[in-house]
Structure formats: structure tokens, C-alpha cells
Length: 458
Image 1 (cartoon, rainbow, N blue to C red):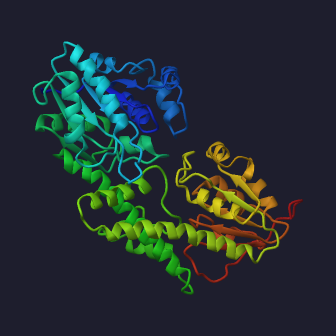
Image 2 (cartoon, rainbow, N blue to C red):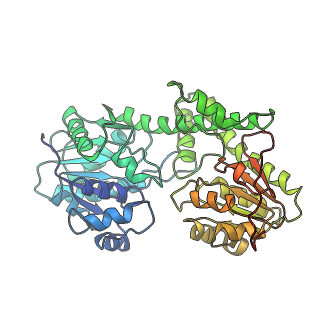
Image 3 (cartoon, one colour):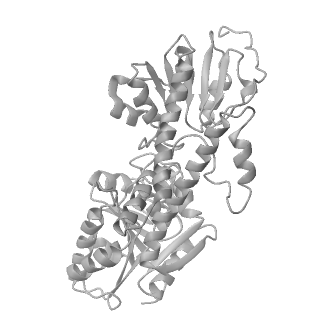
């Protein structure tokens, strides 16, 4: 079947799927979102996002009821659209592999509707992260079995994984660096390539390949990034022991080499979130399955775990030298621009500090509710960075956040305050003289400090 897609359905209106659906509508596609949660569907049809993601509310407000509609009925995807993109969760199994149960359930419903319809042809696209081999061994047979139709004759399948990050999903879909398209036939790949040309504001590198290569490429890319992050962290840890050393000077300089690049090459905290930790585990699980060594990836996972221990050691070491043992945690999410705390370095640090029976004041511009649901009353939650700074003897900055930066740089403590800056976002020369600055990945000489302006806070 030839021609370009005009109408698209997206199954799975989660944090990624809803952003994709909104972007497709924004770029002129007639878009139908499908989700099993009626609450999500109702909110989308009202033009409201069920959760926070930068820019998502505006995207839905502009397109809901126009080019974007939502439903709980899978059959409408077959009846009303040319192509269906499945982007649902693939949770990790105990052995580190990804579970396909949600994809398979969605495909069964779609295939049954396809079989009942008089539609001669439909295109299916899988975008969730899966173990290599899943499409050929599971997804295509499910569609054939439940629809009574045959691949190539009545439908096509592509594997088109996303490469977006929470907190930046909209830009990730509209301006990706690369697109991988696994195809069952060249025509199916060409149609998806044309969809991306229309969806993207930029001109990403688009590679069409076999489905299994696209499945493997998705896992390999994230595995490589985690290795790069861990290497930057190892540089940071080395710098802390060499007088005058500063990880940023090194990574900025050598990151200019095209063989390295500066992206995701900044020493500091361990990697976290919903993708990186589980994708590295999936890579090692895949290697075990085929009897291939994965020592580099095993080392990456180990280094990442050691980085959490390293941060806790720094905080406890610095606490030993302060009289006020209250800790202000400024940042709870795993990265900026999202409320998600999954595998967050800050959350893992908090657990270690709670084991020491320490009082912790927690602040995050977006993630406080998720932290409260996780820790309950074990933490004290403050409504501003300044509030946390006023009552603590030590503060830990774990987010790249301008509001937190400004709050610390303008704060005038009444007694000595130690600040541990995980990403070195602060300008030490702007800090009050009673603030002792500790930059992760640095072993630098003392810096000039400003005096506090004459005020009631001095």
C-alpha cells in the first residue's frame, strides 16, 4: 500500500504516548489517542494534561477537540485512522528483560477489530522499548492470529522507537537527533519516514533497517549513554582527589572532540529515571541470553551504584564537621522539568540519610507530591528553597534549576552553612562568606566570598 498517512492513532496515552499524540496533532495529523483509563481520555478531550510535562498543557489546549481526540475503544483506531502507533509501558521482569504483556494485550484488541472490519489494509507501528526479536516472534503472529489477516497482504508492521526524555518529551519528538525505523517491507518504512519528515521541525538522521536491528539499536543507544555518564562520573571522582582539578574543565574540553561530544558528558550524579537503569539491565540480560560477555555494561551498572554511595559518603563526611545536622535536599526528581522520582539519585541519598536518623527538609518544584507518596512523614516538605536553607546546616543541590540556584546565591545564613552542589550550577563567588561550597567533581582552591547586604537576614 502506498501513499502518505493522514490520520494516526496512538495507543497508550502515558507520559510519552500523550506527548507524541499532541505533537502529531500539532503538526497537522488527524490524531486519535486510545487509553484504557477513562479519566485520562476525559481529560485529554477537555484539553487538559493528566500530569505535568513542560508544554503539554498548551499543546492539548490548542488541539483537543480539533485534530486530537481520545477514546477507550481500540476499534476506532482501525476504523478511523491509517496507522496505529503502540506506545505503552514495557515493565521490567525480574531477570531484567522487558515484559510485552501490555503491547500484546493492545495488539489483540486491535487485531480483533481489524478482523471484524471490512478494511483491506492497516499499518501497525510499535514504539515501546522491547527485547530484540519481540516483533517477529510475538507481535506479528498475534496480529495474524487474532485478525485472520496476513502480513504484507493485509497489514504492515514497523518498529519505530522513541528517543525522548521526560521533562523534554515535546522537543524530543519534534526535534530528534535520529530516527530508527525497523520495517517489514520498504514501502512501510518509506511511509513512516514520510511521517517523520512531516512531524519533525528539524531534519534528523533517519535510518531504515530490519526490525530486529531497530529493536537492538534502541537498547544499545541507551546502554552507550549510561556508559558515557559513568565514565564522566569516574573523572569527577578522580578530580576530587587532585588539587586544582575540575571535572567541567576537562569534560568541556575533550567533549569538543567529535569522537566524544559534550552531550551527557558531565560528571555528577548517577543516572536514573524510567529508561537508563532498566535499559542497561536489559542489555546485560540480552547478552546472557545469547551467551555473550557484557563486562563493560556490568561495570557501568556497578559504577552507577558506587556513585550513589560516593554521594552519601560526601554528605556524611561534610555533616561530621557541622553542628546543625539538619539536611536540606533541594531537588528530588531524577532530572529537571519532571515530577518523576524513579531511580533518582536524590531519593537514594535520602534513604541513606534516613538510615542515619537525620532530619531532612525536602524541596522540589515538581516532585514533592511523589516524594510524599513515597516517604510519607519521614521527611519534612518545605515550600521554597529558602525555607530549607534557613533551618539546615547542610544543603544538597541535585537539580539544574534556576530558582534553586538564585535562592542559594542570594541567601544570607546566620551561621555557617555547607552547600554540596552536585552539578556545579552555583557561582561560588556570589555565595555569602558563611556558606562553605563543595562542588562534586572539584578540588579547587578557596574562592572570594561576598558579604551579606545589611538587612534583617544578616
